[in-house]
Amino acid sequence: MKTPIWFHPTTIKDMNKRAEKTLAEYLQIVFTEVGDDYVKGTMPVSENHVQPLGILNGGASCVLAETIGSTAANYCVNQEKAYCVGLDINANHLRPASKGTLIEATAKPIHIGAKTQVWHIDMSDQTHGKLICVSKLTVMVVLR
Image (cartoon, rainbow, N blue to C red; front, side, top):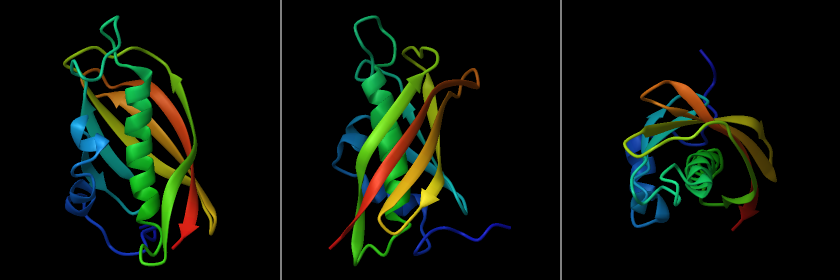
């Protein structure tokens, strides 16, 4: 068993509560699983998520990646003393996803440091099990 990376024990209920009244809630991003060293969440592809060709907008993929990754990052620090914000995000869109698809994102840390963290986020089409996007998110740890 791996040692958990979380500063305080956390639950998906905590993470979903944190996302209320944010862009994540508007885009229907839901945290679904938290493990010792990863966080998972989902986002449906609906009319709010597509570009004019009717496929998932790459920006929506970035929002999903940053939401899952930065939320995970914030649970790796003492939130009374610091918080994490996105510094850089990279996304490689591998295949399209259309309306009605459910996207699952899994965030795992590459580096958890005192000043920065780097997260890898895989996004897959739950219907077909195919990888649709891979992302790398760098966050900055800001002292309060």
